[in-house]
Image 1 (spheres, one colour):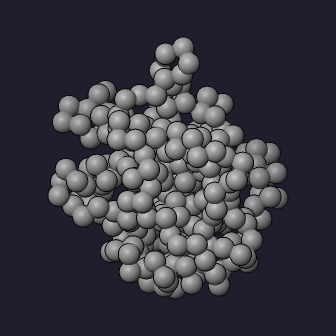
Image 2 (image 1 turned 90 degrees about the vertical axis):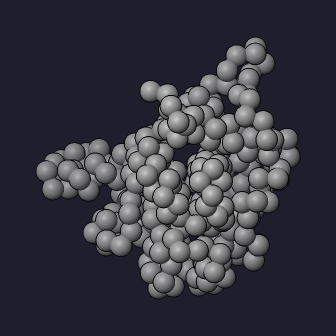
Image 3 (image 1 turned 120 degrees about the vertical axis):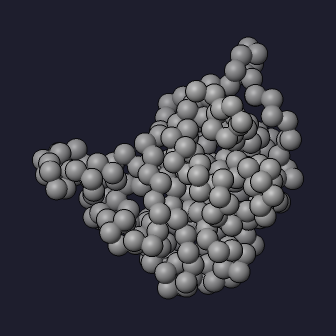
Length: 269
């Protein structure tokens, strides 16, 4: 099993510059600006908890959750440093479909990293649709006695289903999301099933057309694992070191911009 990718190890590979990346024309990088915009709501939801140092660690759900998890990790690390709070550790796990088929391996992995997760972890995922993947994750955490909360960048579909669609508009559910649920095999009401978990459910669209979905949705060069061989993901051999480092550098820049907008003494409005 791959060793967990510690946040400090990632951090050492990333440029310390907070200068905004530019494209070939010398203008601002639209992918970075779009990522800032789409993550703004989620960061705002979690602001008070971050200021309190609520989470000792961050877990990114590979593959698409790796990019937002890196951003949240950089952001939390900066805030914690300024407030004198111990730095958060960062780990990743192979999420995605059919997690139950990897349960034994994932349980072993979560048990192994449990001492480093601290008092409470923050699970960062790019999106929630049916809730099935997080249901599997949280069920394992509950078995192991791991306390965690969840931050999702794109939860629009899930929130619509559980806040009004099922109870108030059955046609909306059937017409708008029938294909989704044939794929995800039914929905789970996470907030009802896990009252001990705090859910921060934003409505961003991190991997929209302007954000280079092909690269960032692959988790900064990470290939998702959807089999029984590993609990974490592996580097995609089709991506160069330069590409991966550029994406990770973008994650730091997005975090710096979010810090300026949300946490700075005089945050931008």
